[in-house]
Length: 108
Image (cartoon, rainbow, N blue to C red; front, top):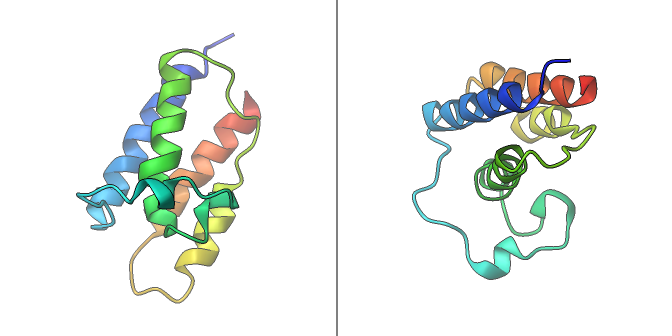
């Protein structure tokens, strides 16, 4: 069976590229307090793009790098679709990449 780790690593890099292409990549990290939120997706302290950049990408990258068990599902794509609803940004590639990540994790 083919390892999932190279696929996820590639998808994470592509997700970062999409965030950068949309100019949603922050130069500065949020405060430690904002990152310590106990709410799902840090909804009370971060925007979704910030959560992707400062929480999701680093955590998933670490799991991939150490070949630790990955989540079976994330469900991030629907969250992104809702977050960007009504936005002027062209986020189809970004939400598509999140859908790919969700699907690849579900496939195992």
